Structure formats: structure tokens, C-alpha cells
Length: 60
Image 1 (cartoon, one colour):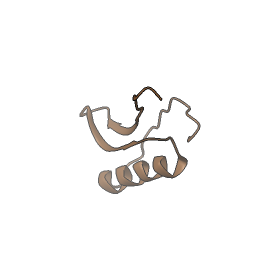
Image 2 (tube, helix red, strand yellow):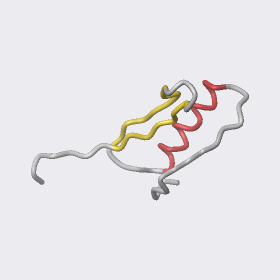
Image 3 (cartoon, one colour):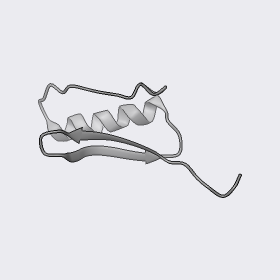
């Protein structure tokens, strides 16, 4: 390789407050990592009914 590294940022953004509720930084995109990000967000936000938008990556 040429010494460059790629990282994957997965985040849950509160569109009203424009702040991240939950995020994860990893080397690869896995469904387990994405599920963990959603679980953290739901635990923090409480009883909500979110609308989810993805860029349709392979982990989704």
C-alpha cells in the first residue's frame, strides 16, 4: 500500500439539534458495527420513533 488508510464513520444525527447522538469509527463496514451504533442511539434517545436514512452501504 502507499501508506494511506481509510476509515469508516457511521453516525446517527439529530436533525433538529444538528448533533451526533451516536457514532462509530472503524476500518471496515460491518453490519455488527452498524447495529451497535443504532443501539447506542436508541438507548440514549429513549422512547422515540426515528426516521432512518442510509446511503445503502453493504452493512445496511
